[in-house]
Amino acid sequence: MSVEDFDVVVAGGGPGGSTVATLVAMQGHRVLLLEKEVFPRYQIGESLLPATVHGVCRMLGVADELAGAGFPIKRGGTFRWGPRPEPWTFHFGISAKMAGSTSHAYQVERARFDEILLNNAKSKGVVVREGCSVHDVVEDGERVTGAKYTDPDGNEREVSARFVIDASGNKSRLYSKVGGSRNYSEFFRSLALFGYFEGGKRLPEPVSGNILSVAFDNGWFWYIPLSDTLTSVGAVVRREDADKIQGDREKALNALIAECPLISEYLSNATRVTTGKYGELRVRKDYSYQQETYWRPGMVLVGDAACFVDPVFSSGVHLATYSALLAARSINSVLAGDLDEKTALNEFEARYRREYGVFYEF
Ligand SMILES: Cc1cc2nc3c(=O)[nH]c(=O)nc-3n(C[C@H](O)[C@H](O)[C@H](O)COP(=O)(O)OP(=O)(O)OC[C@H]3O[C@@H](n4cnc5c(N)ncnc54)[C@H](O)[C@@H]3O)c2cc1C
Image 1 (cartoon, rainbow, N blue to C red):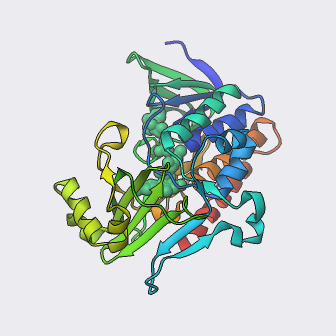
Image 2 (cartoon, rainbow, N blue to C red):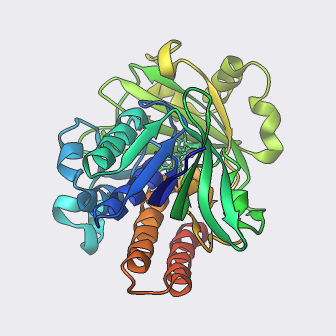
């Protein structure tokens, strides 16, 4: 088997993978990104934060493309949460740091958003191969020196690299190659049941693009406008109430909606989408976890491969892209010969854990 050689190989083309790949390639390094699916593909995680769209996406060179993509503008979050019966709104613009033109984010259909980032990676020089599943790393003693993957024709391939980055999300097992264990939080242990509706009600202007989060006795709902008519709706329940979303998913979701008067009202004239990529009712265990270590010599974890907090904060894409930025910064410093690997990647891990901690403690 012939072995290709790159500076960096990235497993996974979600926001974390395409961000780190692009930022390393922009420094002139040779980067290969291997993605298991063929884009556009479905993904959950539609409500973004301003730091992603005005910070990382501007560095990637896609901020203007996103601004022109027609995604609903999210000016903050509207909550029916806590003792107050009326919904209350948190505006991003309330923070002096985000006032003005950066005081919003977007609600995105992830199939489109992720494809924009992946196409941008290609245009910045990343070699992108879709339909390629990474299943193992190549090791030389303590060091990871490459990756093994299956190509779209089912052939086994091997590629060598100075760094392998696992950005393959929370479903792949590749992260375990970094060593240590994945530690789950006792506090955030919930399950989500979600689907898509046409014709749901909108919040009044100027907050019609906000995420609406509504607490009810057994958990909370997200209600995310993805276009003028399409809405992402999900119920999150505690692990102890898992029986509420077992069995017939349609019945379960309808029963949960009936328990939540505000969501019932917003969906009173809506119909559930039953075909295409939004036609399925999906269930996700969204337990919070952190890997014991985020790197080993030659290997780095970014995004959900490293850690996940909880959907309540809309923090997943932010943590994926921010960790990708930190990883790219450290790897670029090592490849340029400016810093040794241990110093650079300890710095990456410390900053990433700090950002994770901000959301976890909040
Ligand atoms: C119920 C729920 C609701 C959420 N809501 C939000 C939200 O509103 N806002 C938000 O910001 N976040 C949200 N999240 C979190 C968000 O979905 C993730 O944090 C985010 O997608 C992580 O990005 P990533 O790039 O790390 O991984 P992913 O987006 O999962 O991308 C990983 C990519 O790797 C590919 N892949 C997998 N295995 C392999 C392999 N072996 N080889 C090659 N490629 C592989 C996958 O096909 C995928 O394209 C939510 C999560 C859940 C569970």
